[in-house]
Amino acid sequence: MPQGFLFPSKEWAEEFCRKLNENQDYRNAAKTWEGSIMFLATNLPPRVAEKYGRDRAGFVLDLFHGECRGSQWAEDPDKAEADYILEATYEDWKRVISGQLGPIPALMSRKLKVKKGSLATLIRYSAAALAMVKTAQTVPSIFG
Image 1: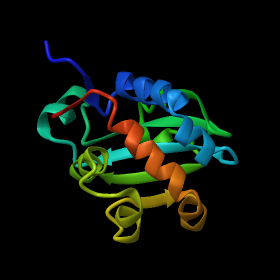
Image 2: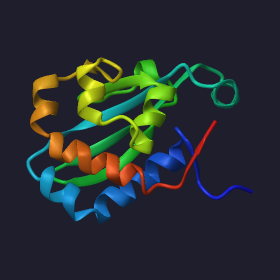
Image 3: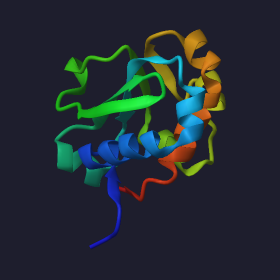
Image 4: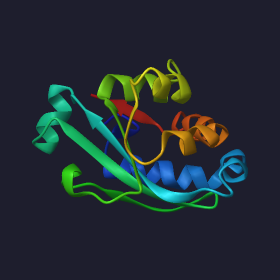
């Protein structure tokens, strides 16, 4: 059995939330942030799409003043509630999580799309976004 968490999955989101709470850089950079964020992956590879019965999957993190107060798996991504929705293809999320593509360049090139919420607000929290990506890189990840 491989060590790690399938991305995206409920277990991956829970571990990401836990690790965010351990990251002091994130806590400092996001100390005035208020709002939930849905991370939505589209164009899932066949093995992952088969697991979920659809070609998109995502989760919501409840983020408040540098703390991740919880994660929620989006059983139906179209019905999930969040203040912000960030959408990218599975491959682009994989590139962001692996550090091959930075979150701000991904936003500016529209590889990472803000489907709901303010891009300007997200840009103001670029230090928090970078800390989030560094945290995501510490989650043992399995990509489909």
